[in-house]
Image (cartoon, rainbow, N blue to C red; front, side):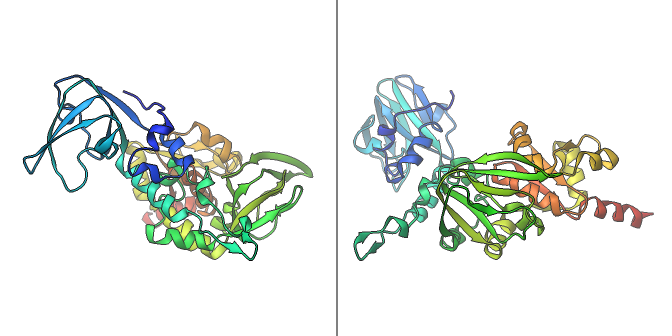
Length: 360
């Protein structure tokens, strides 16, 4: 039993999945599990499906309900288009009248996606000459931002539900042209950006030479490092094409995204967790790491983190440190945006050394 793609047309008939945007249904088609159960068996007794939304997609299934009544469902039709065992009628038992096929999803994942999908649906705004496509943003089309991984594990997973509408409302939409410099290395950080449409390139001046670090596409974010660590921009971002950006002011970014997302821990907590199963990440330059890096730590300098993070495990807890806590805060935010379980170790190595000296 593994996750496998199913027909989007089928998902578009199921309740309440049919209310989701097409991009969400396409993603869900790759995140569901298909189960086959033989005739005469009770699927809910032989499978542990707590916390799952289960649908009958093929065959006939008899349901016995708590009020003493029974009902016969036929796959992908009628009441079978609704999740089994949900709602006011409590399911007591079931029996496969024929061989049956069922489809299931993680219920929390679905709930999170439907919450964001509803709040992110664009309001219909019209100008004097009819619908104005520039007056609204369909957030649901931001495939990178609204991917299931982003919403359940990434930057937006820690955002309190009550703040979602506020966050979306605070973003400002701006048009940009090919060749336009959006942020420049050495300048103060003022905005956090999401690419709605178009592509951009990230470069850094190193000893007078321009080095290309990455290319960004629709759904990608940038500009967070200077805002998290309260330093100047460490790279330049230039548009490769015409496009549209969504930007969030520094103060709104800090209140609505940075603080809810960053998980801060003390050195004592971090050392205990690493002794169990966690891992250290040292985000300083290699020369600093070689001088006094912690034993077993992964050295991933902030400027290399986006590429280096590809090899990390989403199920491992990472404890990120630097010298003072500034760079590690930026690094932990970047990792958290990408769905990794990253924790900032408060105060950096300076705080650790100060604690050791106090003991002496």
